[in-house]
Length: 140
Image (cartoon, rainbow, N blue to C red; front, side, top):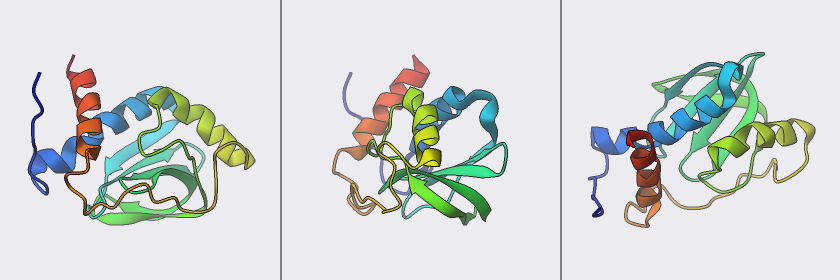
């Protein structure tokens, strides 16, 4: 199978993280109230959890968990008391539930400091190839 280049800022490019996020939502099961893709620059995904918490993923710093304050598909999500889950940009979907528990407890790889794994402006740094792996997995 060859590598398919997807032009930045096209609908297909914007939609790339949704396959990965869908696997995370599946791993979280009935903890999820709703989820959506947010604005670009950087690309984001919000997962509203039952009980008032939310997860936000962005393509620069990965997942963070906190109390949902505001946000929607057109407006960046605001969290309070948030902690980054750690584990890189594409934390294994099955690892996310235990990483949330660690973040709530303030242990493990979680941190209040925002990591920066990459810049959303670097469109040819290989990150979208990593997302392709999740696209292929979901389409298999």
